[in-house]
Length: 194
Image (cartoon, rainbow, N blue to C red):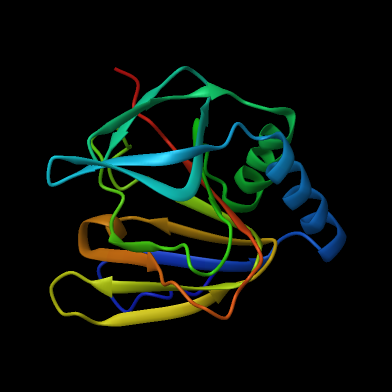
């Protein structure tokens, strides 16, 4: 039984490294070079913002996924993504039909406090987060109490958020000036088919 990192109102399990160094390096290289990366877009206060962070959206079907008022259509799985999906499903006992990838070029790129509560996602479903590349701090903050939990996500590591985590907790990837190498994060999700 894996330890829940959250004190209440949700479940977050950190599996640590599920790939060794050479495998993690191989996956990082494949992801950096063979994913259809695009600058992320968001509509904030009515203005279109284009981020330096890059994203990609893949899935079992051409699912549409809307966040920050921008809709993306899923691309078909690559061989590498199917291999990673299979590993994650084997580790977690969950099944996933889509993956949102983020490419952070350096520590100056991060993600502000948010929760993954989009209507398209399976309610209280698991979100499995794989990290490759630069080791970065990851933080959770309870929406009502402000309680915080922080950890460092290792190269080749897996973290799973499930249950009522998205309803009660925010999470973020803080920026840092100390890191100058890229990080690729994959979040495997379940989109509800309409």
